[in-house]
Length: 149
Image (cartoon, rainbow, N blue to C red; front, side, top):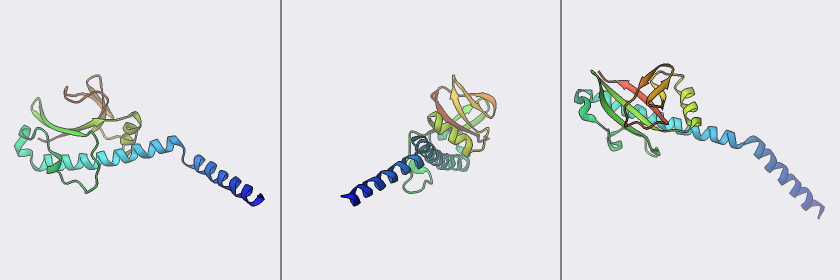
């Protein structure tokens, strides 16, 4: 009976230690970092395709995921893309809804790039001056912009 009590106590200590090591906040951070890595892969594939086919200009409109060079097993979230005219420029937008944790993870991952920002009240908040964004991008989205021309 004493051996069972000691074993139970030891198992309890192990579970307590695991709880301290893997806190819920750390788990959320890991999820946000994984989301960001997926977004970065999707973003690169969209930008590569748009740049390769930029002669089509705004005719690209939205690039279907099946046309992209994506790794097998990549789970696509609610990420979207669109190539659109903005004045004389043709811009490739890659965007998707993001939590504040995901946005912060993206800012860290992309090292504060001005090409990445958060849409709030119609503008992209980023490392640099705010940028007006088209209405098809919902507020609360992580946004990437590149100019094709």
